[in-house]
Length: 87
Image 1: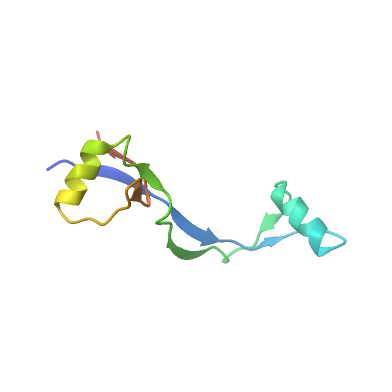
Image 2 (image 1 turned 60 degrees about the vertical axis):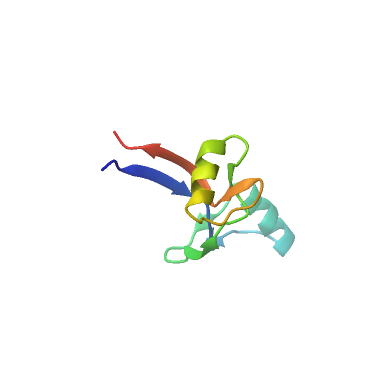
């Protein structure tokens, strides 16, 4: 039986330490990559169901998923970023 590597979009949150004179400056610095992640603060929130593979670009996969009862929107195979057969 083949093995597949499936990448899934997920939402996580992470806290950072940022030296700044104000909250706005701290946010600005963080968005510019200035900040140190705080150990132990990475937290899973949920699967990102609003992102995923395009149904139009992956029609055969979408049809197979629909046939086996996997819920999806008309435009997106929810949460799946990529899938490939492992070598």
